[in-house]
Length: 197
Image (cartoon, rainbow, N blue to C red; front, side, top):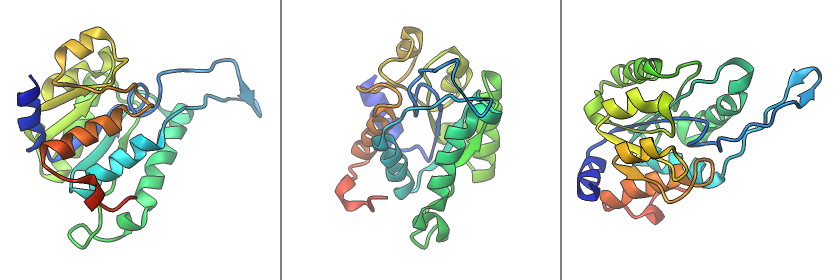
C-alpha cells in the first residue's frame, strides 16, 4: 500500500482536510461560557500550519471542509484567514504567490463530498487529482472518492484500515505535517528549499 500511496502523492494537485480531529485535536471543552456565549477552544500545533504552507509552496491547492459551523467554526475560520493574509497569498499564483486556502463549514458526510467537488471544479481539477485527510465516519464519503486518502494516528480504526496513509502523529499534533512531509518526500522535494511561511 505504501508504494501505491507514494505514486499517488506524486500526482495530486489538491488536498482537502478535515478540521477537528485532523488540524485540531478532537477534544471539546463543554460548559464554559464567556459573556454568555459558549467558549470551546481548539488546540493545534504550528507544525500543521507549516505543513499547509509547504503544500501551498509546491503548488498544491488546499481546502478545509468541516461539519462544524457558526460560532463553533470560529477557530478554523480564523486560521484560514491567517493563511490567506500571508504575504505569499497576496501575490498572484505563478508570480511567487500561493493560491488561497478554501473553507467550507457545516458540511458533513456526503456534504463534504459536495464541498470538495465545488472546490475542485473551481480549480479545474477532479477527485483523481485530490487527496484528503479525515478521522471518523463523517469523512468516509470523501475518503472513498479521492485518489489519495489519509488519516491521523488517533483516527478510528475503521478509517485507518481504509486509507492509503496513516500519520505517525495525532490530529492537532502534527498529523497534517506528517502528510505534507510524505507528499514532499514522494516528490523528492527538500523542505529546506521552500519558503518557511
